[in-house]
Image 1 (cartoon, rainbow, N blue to C red):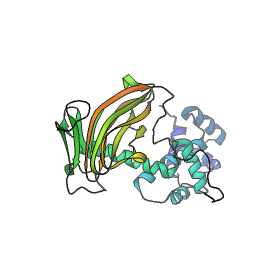
Image 2: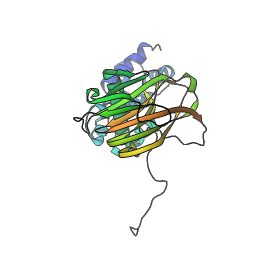
Image 3: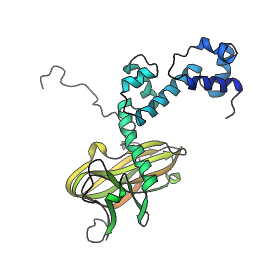
Image 4: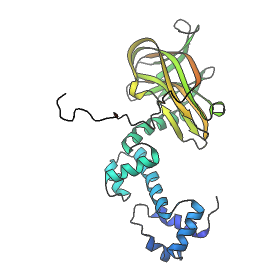
Length: 292
């Protein structure tokens, strides 16, 4: 989109001073136009008021800082001129649909999977890739002796030296065109042996590679040794979706067999498991008098 010189100068000033106290009264002397004329031009070209733009850019930069550093949320909130952690959290949730702490946890997992997929992907089985933080510590193979729905299964297992800080994933991706505007359920059968932690995962990205829906069964992960069980993930594929990625994640030690992956459209009566939107809070308060 083309921006006038007025708007470009305004944006440039804002970007340099995001962590400073930006007052509208300063813009006439900096940009050379009255704040009323400037505000009208800026809103017309960007679709946002100057105050709204500053707020969104501070939140976006704060989001990046939360993923790239270990700074506390309170420190980041004050750094970007919010009066309290509560006001920052409220504003952040309005834009990102998650409170800052939950966003940091979910998106670090999403980014970790995406980055490691890009850097360490190696095709092992037709259609499937082995990836992860340390793919050399994991193996992916076809098992003709253990299966559930057919005559073979996919086996992902950790070598002896893998620990809880390392993960491997069997995964693949495809275009989202056939599912746009639909709610989909991905289901599969999994069997485990002495796993530290594992689960199926599903991710939906837009054209810029941003994740807009995600679930890796983190709140209902599989641990230990289990027989074949059916697992499912339900996500919405919006019109802006471009690609769908899915697989099985294994964190630490153990073995996981996967079989019978299936994608199907479901109705609105089937709830989504999208981690990016869920708060995992109860509907009502409980035990207010500590008697339970």
